[in-house]
Length: 320
Image (cartoon, rainbow, N blue to C red; front, side, top):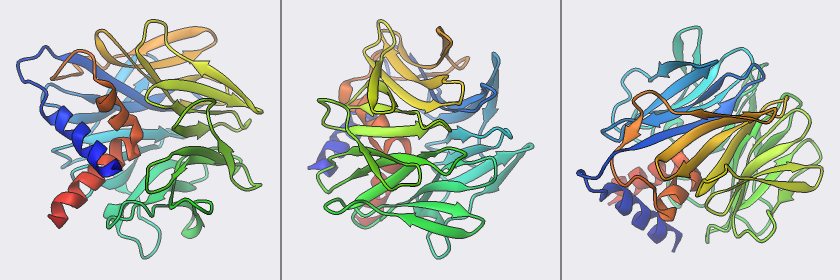
């Protein structure tokens, strides 16, 4: 059933009429303590491009040779090192670290296929977190924490088949989601005492996307309900007038980063100190309807979001 839903959503995206008016399409996925942010935008050919946003200045970040699906900016640490994923390099994509003007491949855990491994973040001391994808079934993913080549695997609790780490802080904490073969998602974080499950009240799907050094977590419930979680309390976060809101990252000042959809399309945002900054990459727009349908937007946040959906799609094609 989950594969069928993903296939339908992909078909909807692919079938968007070329003559339809383009819409803004920018996402912010990571923020550091200096307020620098990273994400991706989509151009008129529906190719994705990574970027860095720093105090109003946009810097494009495209991994050399990454055509097709393009490049995603996933996370940035306080040294300005940026985790990118080039979707079209190799059969399933490849993770890169951008630092001091150079793109360097991020190696997977020892013995793992680099094209089935997704790095989601790197700390200031070089700890890499992410997950390894099971390209056969898609339901046996494993989270990992790589400290200088010494890997700690993080597996799903009993009764669930897959776990993915999506974010990490500087005190050893990680955050993400785990799920079963029916794609029942449950958010979690682990700050050293084992997995703490986070289920947004009344939601059928919860993802914890990031956690800061104080243990404040952020995430997404259902299709587009952003939230902040602090010491057992959920605070919903929605951009006024938006149809959907997703929160992807939080820094130690409590500034959050994410994306929202309104009548003009998809916009990135930063919110801190009561100030909302909308992030629209100059010239960033994609073809298709001005307002994404729920299934289309869910596809982006679901997998598995940006990366896993592409991996599963390509895996299916390779096995066809």
